[in-house]
Image (tube, rainbow, N blue to C red; front, top):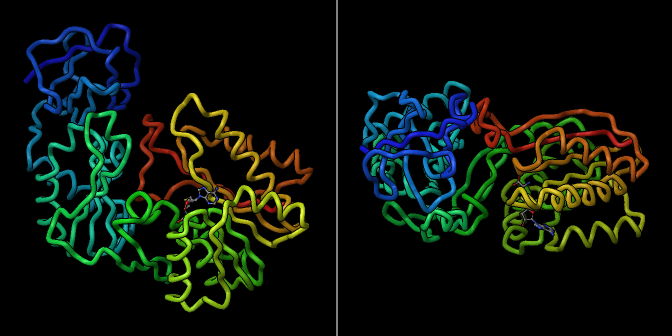
Length: 390
Ligand code: SAH
């Protein structure tokens, strides 16, 4: 197995547990490796650091999967890791649905697996893990005996690894329109055409967090996707709920979700651009008891963070203006490029411009099936805030 040596001046990041090694952090090599191979990594003075998958075409040249020299990376290794991840999810209370593998946080960089009751959706986002897809599928079949496994590798980031975008069945074909249960509600999940893996499991605790503020309320949800927060609002006693999303497909599913839960008289959905509509409604003087906003990431690159900040500020400013005095703003940000303190600062700037005071109700992150691993900052990405807008 080829050996790669880190340069002398590489900081503590890798030593502290971060699994990524960038091309410019590598010095000498001993032996040769093919793209996607497992290689060994050593410090400049020769002490063993770990083993990981290698891809010279990627900026992240090596992604470590183990720090144990005696551990062999083979099919059993992946079975063991997936079993451990499932045992952990069960230990912290997950039964039906969960993010089973959250990449780096489960020591399986670039691998995502979501479990939707008897179905599994997988993404292999780097060459090194993509090569192990057959072993991963085998392990999943053995551990879960699932009704179906589907691959959602239609993700642009794969191209940075020299991989094609693709999606399809990894088992016999099955009906990919499934129904899951969450917090006592039912949701349609379209595994093939839904966004990402079909459903945002990371917000499941946050959806519960709106319970007390929506009772008897007129609620507006921008960026509602399939209406999951809207449905929770109705479930917790909202008087009326209006959900907006730019995607017709998402809005159609939201309407079907309302019927599925018998909330079609409370929840309405419209396919519109929330930025335009919210701006207009502020002018029109519309006001709501609760405004909920979970916009898309705004940026995928560090260079565009300012664009993201401006986006978050604008949309939250509009959200605050649409909130009645004493009402509540429920707001989220799903990109790790905007860290929690910066997100709060942005909301604060919006409040200043809106000339409103904020009183914090809830401040939390993603559900714990997406574990935050200390010293791997990208594992903390979701920010979720409820404030009273005075
Ligand atoms: N809160 C949702 C997830 C929202 S994801 C949940 O928990 O399931 C963000 C959503 O914003 C996506 O559904 C996307 O279609 C929508 N979106 C993106 N740009 C938009 C725009 N300009 N106006 C309205 N919706 C938009």
